[in-house]
Amino acid sequence: MKISHIEHIGIAVKNLNEAIKFYEEVLNLKCYAVEEVKDQKVKTAFFQVGQTKIELLEATSEESPIAKFIEKRGEGIHHIAFNVDNVKSALEEMEEKGVKLIDEEPRKGAEGLNIAFLHPKFTHGLLIEFCGKDNTDN
Image 1 (cartoon, rainbow, N blue to C red):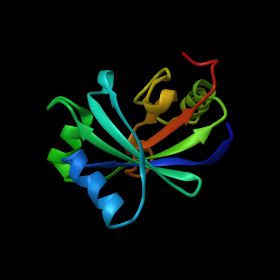
Image 2: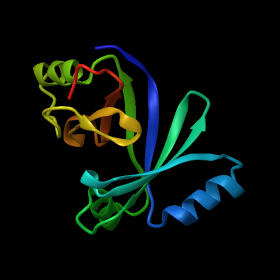
Image 3: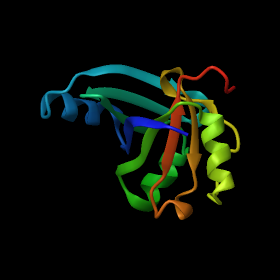
């Protein structure tokens, strides 16, 4: 597995429009995409900051992992996503190393990327996402 860079930092927010307004008007960043990922019950907004993106995440359902996260911990950093050369291979490597996976197989996420998450109990409390554009997964 090769990690090339931090792809994005995911931030859980209660109100996407209010959060976008803050990032644009206060931090002078430009939201370049808003997208709903229906199977994850989330609406996202993206900002480019150098090579890394900020992904704001708003729940579209009370059953959404984002809604549950905010209920438990409040708004804030939800995950860090690392770009990998092959998501499926990265998952296999993590499993071989004894890391518990949330996703056994890659799935489609925002921006058409293949994504998969590692369990935070095995990553010192941080939810880690692997993502990539590889077309060999899914």
